[in-house]
Amino acid sequence: MGKTNWSRVFLGGLLAGVVFFILGWAAYAVYLARLWGSALEALGRPPSAMTFGAYVSTIVSALVLGILAVWLYSAIRPRYGAGARTAVCAGLAFWALLSLFPSLSLASMGLFSANLLVIDCLSSLVMCIVGTLAGAWIYKEEQSR
Image 1 (cartoon, rainbow, N blue to C red):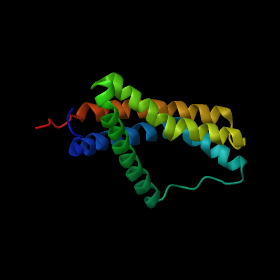
Image 2 (cartoon, rainbow, N blue to C red):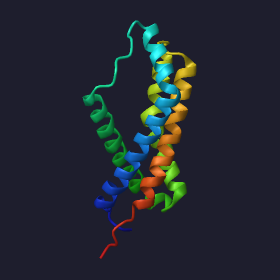
Image 3 (tube, helix red, strand yellow):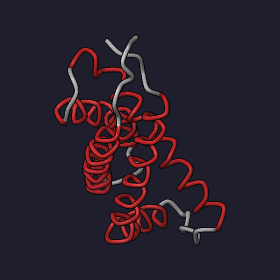
Image 4 (cartoon, one colour):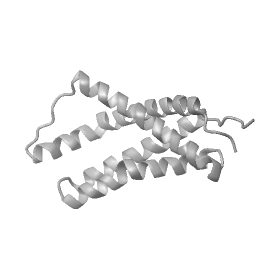
């Protein structure tokens, strides 16, 4: 079993983060902005315009999340083997932690519609699986000496 290749975790994570950002931005631009805007207005909190700081925060968050997703792939790879199936498993686990469980918690509070949370959760499912697959494509373990 090889050692974790941290430079590949970082590089693959950056690629995964870029994919997360692009897919997340596309989903938000196409349909989530309207849904979240309506939900926030119903709570008396009109959505505000994105500031430069919010854009930077979103980009940095996506990159850090990408690195974490590829790290998870590298951690389970010795047990499940290298490849797309393991990347999908890592992406599913990452999605559950990042989106599914928080959405279930929000649903139990009744603040947001089930429709909004399901659409948001399914969008992030695609984002997590595709991003983790992209990052795993870059990842290769170091050979032990």
